[in-house]
Length: 151
Image (tube, rainbow, N blue to C red; front, top):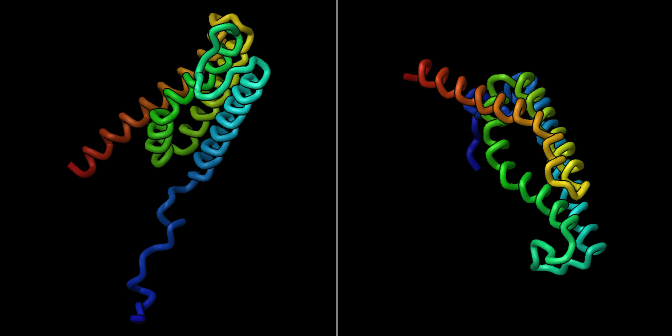
C-alpha cells in the first residue's frame, strides 16, 4: 500500500456538500415517507378489494382504481421531480426545500382527494404545481448560471 500525504488527499465528501443541503436531504426522506404511505395504501386496498397481482386495476371496484392511480401518478412524475429538486437544491437549498415540502405535501392532498372515489377531488393537490414548477424554474436558473460561469 502506498502512503498518500494528507495534502494530496481528496476533500472529505461533506466538504463538497453546500451549506444547508441537509434540508434538501430531509425533503428527499419526506418524499420517501410519502411514497411508502401511498404504496401501503395500494397494498391494503388490494386485499380489501381482492385485486391480485399482476393486475394493476380492478374491473369491479373503481375505488381501488382511484387508490392505485394516486400512487401511480405520483410515481410517474417522481423521477423528474427528484432531478429538478436535486439541481435546484445544490444552489438554492432552502428555497428548493420549501418548494419540495410543498410538492410532497400536495401529493398527500392529491391522494386523499382521489381516495374519495371521485377523481375530480384530486384537484385538492393542485397546489403542488407551485413546488414542481418552482424547482423546474430554479433548475433553469442554475443551468444558465453554470453556462455563464463556465462559458
